[in-house]
Image (cartoon, rainbow, N blue to C red; front, side, top):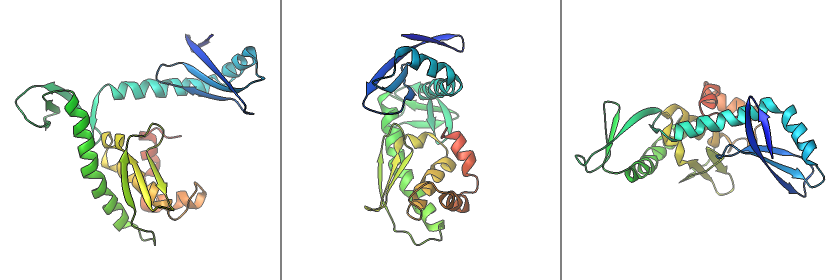
Length: 212
């Protein structure tokens, strides 16, 4: 089943489950995935898609931008042209270029840099916070839907290693965000006031990270 949105046809994949509400998602294949209750008909779902076109177009455009970004090489908020050569034994950045002997080196470089930089930024952000919170353990891994996660019980902060592609300012925002969850384990007004106290420009960071 296909639907015409913004002058283009998109395939619709319907997943019927034992739920009450209907949810829309756009994945990397740019198909519209609909998780629906079992009683909803195809025509009803199509009507819902059309009435929610604005939101779905935003999902499509966000995914297109994400794919465009992932096809380029970014490190700490800067884009670099990748040059394959055997001159350097390790990835070397110079004059807007990163020199590598193979594309596999790029992923390893980013992972190594995340492991090197994230603990430093965590310590810097933690030391600036005038709050009685525990010094957390740090976990770094790739996540698909979160930039960070706070496990208050285990005193653990997890950071998405993809953050290394963004500037230190965005990295610091995510760290402050997660540290503030040790103060307010929710997204209440008080929580965002705490985030603003330690990261006044957090709204700009959220726009860059394309958060809701």
